[in-house]
Image (cartoon, rainbow, N blue to C red):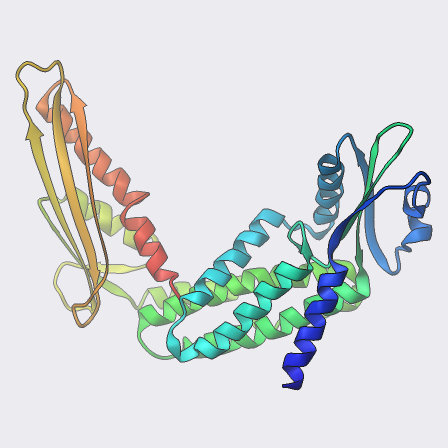
Length: 345
């Protein structure tokens, strides 16, 4: 209960501290005239800039401050969204643990981030004489370093639990768990890099799990233990079978043509000619059904897609259909569904 109250108090303070401020005054604030005097470098990481609009001026200073962190803000926010999404899909056995950290991260980024950076404060002032917009982006080195450390400590604990969980059990469950840990580690790596920029005291700190690449390597090693049985019907000269096998092999998975493994990928392809003697072009249409089954032959995911191709001759239309099939399986179809499944917890 004490920890919950402390977290609530912390989040309230974060809400008050993170904001974008628009100053309307005749006289310029001190930071416009003397940035070092207003926000000494020993205590603050601060950058100033100008623009013709508020958005232009603020985006400029936020870009400059993010460059000092060597972090792409859009990429960081994608990590955060991915982690939050995967937490909501976690298995029930870890629901309490995952719900707690999900709420923790969501609350912090909702209440204490500006432009995707925790603890960032952005101000602007309009010069009444020239209408030029001055902006400053600033972060308190000590306070933000402390906040980042709290998040990092919590993330490290969860990452450690995930990696330990991935030491035993079904290889596919282990790969999914490690992929989730990897995404959480990517975000944590960035937070660690940011706190070392904020204050030199953090330079000698090391993360318990090393870095995100260590976890990714462990996930890739675990993938080698996974074997998928692949079966394709309606194929032409095993063309689609080779495409599907290549997709899996490139991701580090092994395949087999006889069912010994726990997981099976079943694909049904149907190609039909659309003959119209009076038409300028001839056409062919395909329908593809694919599904992944687990060791108990339960359907894990499935999908159906149909499309057509027109060409000068039926044979050319058929070849065009096969190219459409390969393109669909490589991009928006099977590969996308399979990736979502592998990363689903």
